[in-house]
Image 1 (spheres, rainbow, N blue to C red):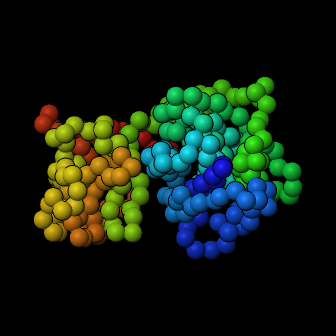
Image 2 (image 1 turned 90 degrees about the vertical axis):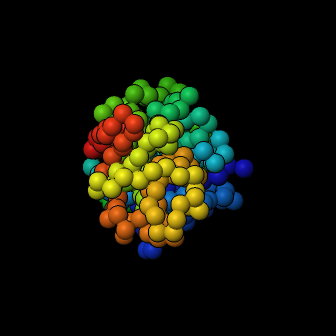
Length: 258
């Protein structure tokens, strides 16, 4: 059975996610809908792109991801439908799907299905992208003659790994946009000049000690054992995190801004 996964910066409160779900249930009744993220970095399609790419692996290959981090809503930015390794991604053409597309083995890109009902200027998530996601979940597919250049999705100036904090979770742990496999075994991460060594998990360091580790989704994450890294280290989304290895300090694996 097809699954629809919602990824947005709408926040955990308010009416927006509920309105999109109502459209999904009307357009694809009986389809399972889950919330992958409701609190992606607000207005930040670049940081959200690294976060999204790290969290799609557990999704079944026929999942439809409805992704709406859309500060340009109502402008001339286009809407896209991206098929990457069997999963579909629907949302704005603002880089949100850039890392998913770059890491895909099989990629096709299409313009979003046109709206068939009223289209508000400020809520394309409900009026444009959710109906398109529902159609994909029902099994509809775009015409291959409408396929776009896959390079349209890429943001070539964006690095493969982003040395910035992209998300702070409920516990105050700070996820970066860097995949742990991109860092050497002896790499230290530096937050505001404070070096942190790598550990396997929380209990491997004393209570109150900051460290970094490979989180369950493969990202390098800064944490404090039984503490809050955001408060202890002053980390917020967007903060730079440098990398230092045996060869010395580097600028990280990329800090390009949108």
